[in-house]
Image 1 (cartoon, rainbow, N blue to C red):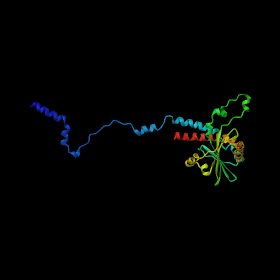
Image 2 (cartoon, rainbow, N blue to C red):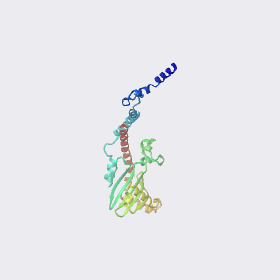
Image 3 (tube, helix red, strand yellow):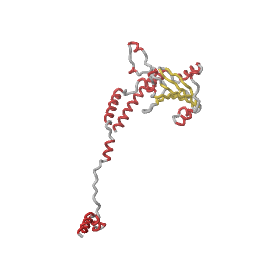
Image 4 (cartoon, rainbow, N blue to C red):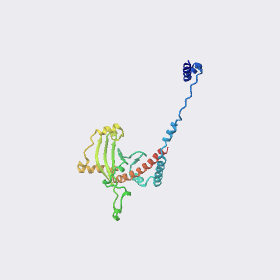
Length: 265
């Protein structure tokens, strides 16, 4: 009898929740408090990740380069550009941030566009005979007399007549000379001049003309004179490499400014 009473009391002690459940009305039950371990702030962690350890150093170095380049930059347009535009009938179309540059003029009933790219300064290879002036090593007095070889500039010349189509002459300007590579005719002048995917697709499907070097020599000479009359001459060939160097420097300064502002933001 004593052992039964002991087991009953032990069961009652081991299940106190059941006893409280019967004694406390449902409406007055209180949920037990739950204690959680402290958690790291997710947003704080993200904020720390969004600020790179190198950002400040990189922005500082970019700013140093920017200030140095600005200190050597000419405040006004260089004289060689003014002189070329004054002595020739071209108008310059150059937008900051754009790789291509155009020279525009009219000749009688013709619209002429000379298109070139500043990327040619980076494509020039040392085995083609071009070395930047600062990389050339002078060897005695003879080195002073030698002319610095210019890098080749690919130039596309488009001559258009309203309602008559257009002719595009692909050339290379180097060392004060213009060398013709090909001559192509377009019945539709827009196909020759428009910078669109559709126009580019149409150009790819057209006959590009014969190899210029295989033409009769007299015909080659006449084509060269034909371009010279329209200002595609030695003066232009000498102007293009100088202008490309000038524009490339301007684009570099703007690139430094843009990247510095981005890294610092």
